Length: 319
Image 1 (tube, rainbow, N blue to C red):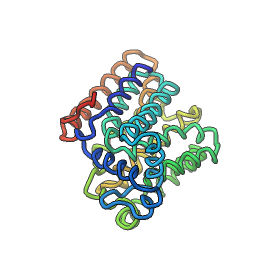
Image 2 (image 1 turned 45 degrees about the horizontal axis):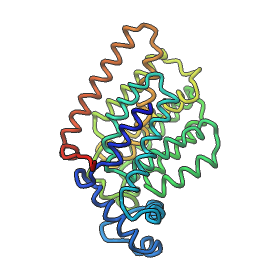
Image 3 (image 1 turned 120 degrees about the vertical axis):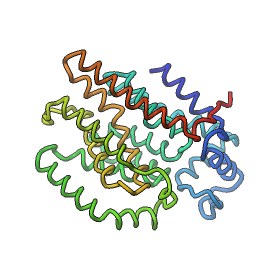
């Protein structure tokens, strides 16, 4: 895992900011925060740079150490890469498969969607406090994550959901809640995004049928590996299972609403862990090998379809 950490860190931290989208904005805004006072940056802001207060404070603190934007890239890269590598090392039975899924699902986008993926990294680091039911430590990390990117607030639901018993009654209530939210989704998303949060995302990435199918496949694989028995799940197994359930629900509710694609990124992190956990439960080696090959092929194709986009074709290192 140390070798994985070093390689992914270098590719992340020393990416040429002018070879991918969004990063030029982060570079310019960092210099503006460095040149102006914190009060001015928070109260007045800068045209074209709508960023959360926690992120502005974070950049300002870093600017005391260096006026070069590279320190921002190094710091966020350490946080993002460490959050995945440490949790993969702790919780995944197949490290290579988890690393592969991480690279295919979230790593590419984290190169330039910096604020949200930094917030996601903090959310991932908070999962141990969800399992331990240490509310104040969880809330402290989440407060920082939300101050970096407001969408992180959706992860707060996981603390509540994890405390519920997984039984027929809970599943029934979950289905009813899903139907209610699905019925009222236009009004709910209209308030959250158009009036309050990230209205500009409405023209961007959306939840589509591929996302729904993938989340359902991950959930089905887990249920099939356990023969539908959810009684004796381990602590982290239950956590990642519930994250996947929330991903399925959000994918279904979010069909046709682009901003929910961003929200679902928080729960899709569970695939990195739940897929290997599910494969591990099959006793026969041939079945484990077959499913692993299918998973690698499926996400490999999706990964290739993504990297040939204009977002990544111009990627280059500073070194």
